[in-house]
Image (cartoon, rainbow, N blue to C red; front, top):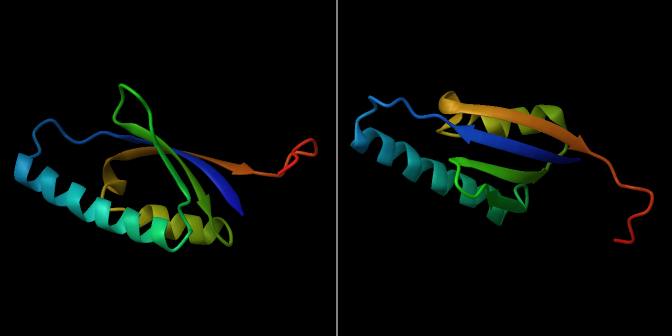
Length: 92
């Protein structure tokens, strides 16, 4: 199943910079592993915001929830999920 996911990151203003850097480093490693294995085929930054749009290709809702809740930045994110279905006019 394909899902369009918007993630808005909201780190606490009082988070120590070293802690934020460590969380971001773990986030990058984890997200890149999911990209390499094909479950996170698209990752797009929202210009001017600390946010992204991503497409996930996973078995279903439970797998998506597991992946998202395992993100190191998950406690600091607002997440919107939209399940996608093939459009009848699509040629690809």
